[in-house]
Length: 244
Image (cartoon, rainbow, N blue to C red; front, side):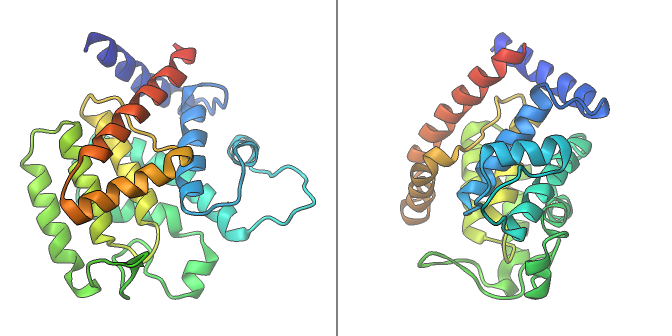
């Protein structure tokens, strides 16, 4: 446990210093690229790890014979901003308004979403689905989110509580689009805030992740999700040891 605390203290300190110094060579930049690449890739982004790194490091994309999809670039930049908003608000409690601010950072620069009339930084106005699974209807989202946040604020936070929060949040699917990315950012934040090694879901484990969420929706079981979280915590910890 002392090693975990040491690791988390290191992360928080380096995130602050490296961001302020615009350092693109340390653990802050690594985490930005890792989280943004994997979270967007899970949702179908076509950008590679190299392209993600280039976009974060210098705001440009490598020359390519292939076309870049504008939405992928806009959402990747939005994810970088959302991560910074997360760091800026670590001292605040998690609230519905803060979650909406995360969504706004992610989506405010996405032309396609604005053209489609999606609510940006606010809850969805049209029903949506996860595959064949029906999510909470727009008129019930605020109440369901209130119940979720009320439950969460009365818990002693541990990884099981965070797994249940994440699964319930994704089942509500409060936004028109960007639910997975905001949900995974919240998961990372709440780990960091509560002295827990953060979880970064890798795109390589996408199928396992989706199956785990489906298991919760169908059986209210967190077994698969907790198993995945444990694996991803070890992955992130091992990768970050390089910088220590």
